[in-house]
Image 1 (cartoon, rainbow, N blue to C red):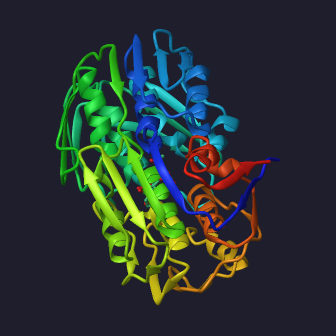
Image 2 (image 1 turned 60 degrees about the vertical axis):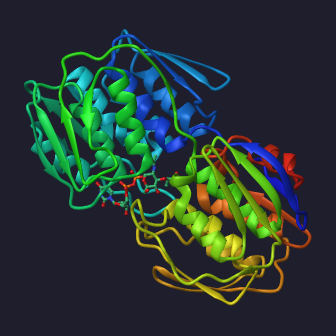
Amino acid sequence: MKNIEIIGGKRLSGKLRIHGAKNSVLPIIAGAMLNSGKTVIKDCPNLSDVHSAFNILRNLGCKVALAGNVAEIDAEDVTCSSIPDDLMKEMRSSVMFLGAIISRCGNACISCPGGCDLGPRPIDLHIKAFRELGVEIEETEKYIYCKKNSELFGGNICLDFPSVGATENIMLLTAKSDGVTIIDNPAKEPEIVDLQNFLNSMGADISGAGTDKITIRGVRTLRDTIYTVIPDRIAASTYLCAAAGCGGEVTLLNVVPQHIDKVIWVLRNAGCYIFESENAVKIISDGKLKAVSGIETHPHPGFPTDVQAPVMAALSMTQGTTIFIENLFKGRFRHVAELQKMGADITRFNQVAAVRGVERLSGAEVVATDLRGGAALVIAGLMAEGKTIISDILHIDRGYEHIEKDLALLGANIRRV
Ligand code: EPZ
């Protein structure tokens, strides 16, 4: 099992280009199935979650090739409509293939997506919406069987919660249909807008992504497209947190500043200088940060849950105390115990964590508990005195292209061992 070894205490400086967005490219890869032809995805990040998605497409009969960051998907012959257990287990968000498979094949069978690093991951909102749209669904202990008896005629869906995955699944299910589907209370994340733009580039007729109402006017066929994925706002936020915590001067290229406005606001309040241009962001930090008033995670446009752990690491060596409230996932404080091993002073009560800034962190042997929690440990290791060894780094590889190479380019003493 590989580990990441860090000798902390170095300032970061230099330029780094941010890769395409993992949480955008995954539903787009599923969407490629809706076209019985060729789809080219540019700026496709080279991540293990992306390779898992490619394996699911191959299992369904598609041909997939990734050259650098360009993915070519040929979905001419889809021969299967089920995802085997092992592939479902590899990536919890495989459930988002459900809508695309039903649309393409008329039926689908997947195993129930188990829990994951962040706690239970229910899909009740997906199932409820699909049933309201006319999909017959039978749930057993282990499997979910779906079948659409006739063409989908659309409908009005009001989501009880603005679930990202459920919004994406409904868009993928209904892009090709006979009617009009309205989604009220949809997720508004930039990745939803990217999925709308991707599907429309294939000939779909979707509008309203990013607002309180998405309208999907079903079309009969979709066509070949070449599409470039938006930059990964969570990866950009992670590197900003690293530069903020370590001190230094770092410029991130291929960034959409308004996608990370809440993170920029927090880091400016912590004492960093951040400059924005159309597609780049520059941060200057002396590494001596101030605590920030409460950070509470919410669906977009609120503070993103995926950046809660990286920001907690960056703010663990500050003057004062920062209160974090995690509203999205029950199991999203598992990095707290690992940060405490490095000397962080954090008191946790259910979904609240009070982080009292300490003078210094000390290197330690820690375990990556999940993707963003692992990224937080990398940041803490860069800030700490001495050596930090992070194990279970496969979690981190799910969402960051060669994180250690990128940080080494910025001057960090970090390597994969
Ligand atoms: C997406 O997960 C992202 N993953 C997550 O990023 C991100 O944290 C999350 O959205 C919130 O922004 C991808 O896009 C691949 P949700 P998703 O459905 O779709 C509950 C990362 O680190 N819920 O908006 O699973 C759910 O339990 C990952 O890159 C239901 O109760 O998120 C959670 O508490 C982690 N029933 C909340 O809603 C449902 O049917 C948000 O889930 C669906 C969700």
